[in-house]
Image (cartoon, rainbow, N blue to C red; front, side, top):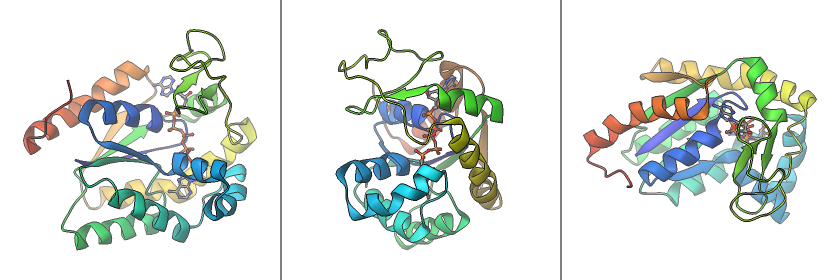
Length: 223
Ligand code: AP5
């Protein structure tokens, strides 16, 4: 199963990709998470990406395409893409590469969320630097404030989650990433999902789209 999950910053891509990966046994490939890992490890790619990420701008296509092509090759049994493709050029390169491998994207889902919700969600997001679990101080708080439920690690705030940078990220989204939604719409069905609601409601709508696809492809859902 090959799924693309599109949406603005804070739409809930990471939150729902994790749930999709758990439910259907596919690999969650987040370009943002991979870049943050490269930064934490101090690699050349991480160093090159740093200034773009901190400013809320996109990392150049050539770096991203190479990084994501490698990640996709390592997930032959299926994946859900989170944060990639993010420019029309990235979408074209992905399509060409899939055609060359006689593969296709099975479903494109587009999480739609209002700008006010984005700012509230992102400024309240906290994550675990050890296991990657994502929380929100109000909407999805951990059991003990400031501490990861899974491993007790103190939670951190992403450096690009300030209100100023979020506004730049939103502006970047409308200018460079929203055209990707139109790119896909011109070629296939894009399933728009209202993502303003609570996480369980949004997840139920997403699963309502993906369960029939799983039945059609004969893939087994994890228990
Ligand atoms: P990336 O990490 O991809 O950031 P993003 O797209 O801005 O998305 P976010 O991770 O902020 O949000 P999300 O939609 O995953 O929301 P989440 O589920 O966490 O990219 C970071 C940077 O890397 C980019 O700015 C760019 O520089 C670079 N980059 C990455 N990919 C690139 C590419 N392809 N090309 C070029 N550059 C690239 O949810 C947010 C919060 O809301 C959480 O606290 C969550 O708990 C809460 N929440 C989620 N859903 C709900 C809900 N339904 N109700 C209430 N709260 C909710």
